[in-house]
Image (spheres, one colour):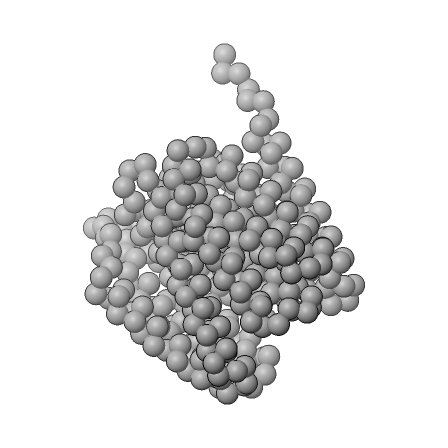
Length: 339
């Protein structure tokens, strides 16, 4: 399910990026993307098995795919000069605040009404309400950045400074556990669903507290150096999952949250600064990310199922550490003299 939804979410983002660049518009694709997600989430209430869950998850991720690159394009176009990092940091902070709010509401509902099947199905039905609210905010309050100049053809000319961080990010995504794997690890460690929700809330709270600050640091410093910290935190989060205990699991979730904030904000800031055809480059980046993360989800899933979580974690941590080492070597390699 994770592989299918991740692949759908990121692979099709290239379409939204290409179209937003082609027509020099962002908002129509945001409306379409949020509309698809608003419709898809309540349908989980009628799901009867993992196949239908995978199909609905892919459909819901299609909405994110349509809106992701145009959204990043709009943010980078709207950002004040020299504040691209802050703009992406603020967006991520608000995005995660919504996620954490949903988890808090879910935890309260489960505490009051229990965790029966009917409770979960009713929560999915009620998810239509925030979906509609989001669409109304988008329609009434979000201003597009449009241009009379439309691209007759979309170029995949990726500026040289973008290639290295993009490809290293994709390589790292092959080995990095995604959030569902963190949840599964916590579940297998014997943590009940309310405890898992608290772990997720701690992760999201970490991202909220760090996101804007990370954006400020990205504007003030070389983003590549901050990416080193992000990759390092990702490796440490994987190593923490090899240990047992609720405290260590909490540390892993918190480290993972910090890793995601630094890496995603860093890459988006670099593309927002350097790319000329922002929509196309954001779309291409998400296409590459789709291939890497989906392949990683399949490999890690099969290793976990057939050889155990220890082997899956060792594979992930070792591979992620190699990518981190490559990033550091490339970052600090001697520069050729211009003389």
